[in-house]
Structures are given as C-alpha cells and as structure tokens.
Length: 305
Image (cartoon, rainbow, N blue to C red; front, side, top):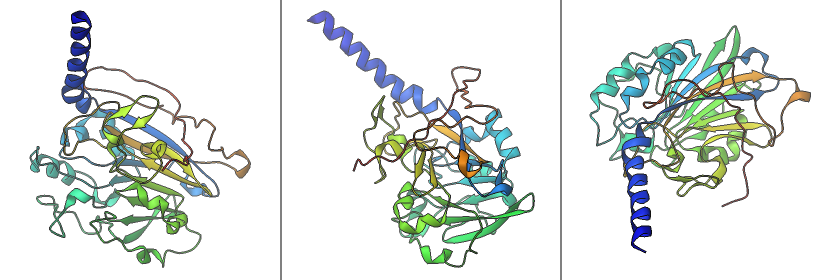
C-alpha cells in the first residue's frame, strides 16, 4: 500500500507541476482550412486569430507567428487582452506594432470594467475596434465583409448593426464567445471566429474540456466545427489563463485560418477529413523544436447540452 501511495502521489505531483509550469507555456501554432463554396475571390484568404492573450505578449514574437501575421490578409484579436498576473504595457507595445490596416479587435468579458471598455494603455487605431460594426474589405478585387460583436454578456451586442450588410457579399463574424453561432442571425456568416473557452483549460483526452465556459457542444468548444446549413466555427483555446493559472490537455495556441474554395460537388461533409494548409499544422513549443504535420478533423456539433 505504501508503495502505491508514493507512485500515485508522485504522478499527481508531476501532473500538477506540468499543469502549472509546463503546458501554460507550451504554445502550439495551428492552421485550420475552411472550405467555402461560391466565394472564388476568397480562395487563399488567410486570417490569424489571436484571442484570450491575458498578457502573453511573448507569443507575438514567435517566428512562425510573425511570419503568419506578415502574410495574413486579416489579423483578428478576439478579446481578453490582459491579466492581473501580468503587466499590461508589454502587450500594448506588441499590439501597436501590428498593421492597423489589417487589424480588427472585438472585446471580451475581461476587457470590461464597471460597464466600460478598458484597453489602456493600448489605444486602438481608428476603425480597429469592431464591436457592433462591420467593415468591407477586398482580396484581389473580391469584396467581403468582416463583422464584430462585443462580449455577449458584458458588451451589449447589437445584431441589428449588421442589418445593412449587402446581400450576396461573403461575411465573417468575429465574436469573443462562440455562443454567437447559436443565434439564428449568425446564419448570415459563413465563418465565425471566437475564443473565450480556453479549451476548458483542463481537458480529458478523448472526452474534452471539463468546463466549457460556453453553451456550444463540448466537441465544438475548441477547434473547427461545421454548423448547418453550411457554416464553420473556429474556436481558439487562446494563449493565457484566467482565474487559475493552469492548463492540462488544452495547450495555448495561435490559430491561422485559411479559406479554400471548392465546387459544391466537392464540399466535405461534417464527418470527412479536411486537409491541412500547405505548411500543415505547425507546432513549435518552448520545449521542443521542429514541426508536426497532420490533418485536422472538423467536429460536427453533437447534441450534448
């Protein structure tokens, strides 16, 4: 009995140390390929999704991330900039260096204080904050729309702000919380980008996050999922932590989304594999070098509550 006590005790101590000192700093870089139909001008559209940074300015200095940002059509910061455990100024300086012509921001729950948006010391350039706004962008002459919602609970979201989006234009929606995809009005958007969940921060392999922090199904609380009739949701696990500074089974990540246009007959179903982008899914961590290449399977939303 004593021997087993030390075995289990040692394993528990090791897991706790990994959750506090290891995984929170083991950043991965992930590419998701989103199929799109009838949006030929958007083929190859590249979006870098940065969310739930919670002060992690160091993530923006990673070589792969810098390369992605330099080549991206759009850089999305989807809320929750700071953490009380980290100084604000380093992240604010990193955000200032991003190209404002390709940058959009929507607020998260931690960006609000006493009913007011608190982003200081970062001062977003004019037009960057997309809370309850939409903008028209072009890629190689093809127009598309990027719309944004503030945090669904603290930010007073206004879906009516999107009523005048021109019909027929492809549209992306950025929302800090993935729950926006549950609203019927999100059907206007072929792609929803979100964060907030942290992938649960603690997840059980093969089962998923213990706490989802969202009403979307468990398997859609992180990663790529397909929603009827033909919409896609990408939820990033984010980079930082909140409340408890731990992660287990939910590594922090920077996400790149690449749109690939396919004919209707070649559109995948929710159970099929989606091939990775040209560079595959890149994983470069603080503890190991090199690349890992694998396909990403989109999870169909399940019926779980």
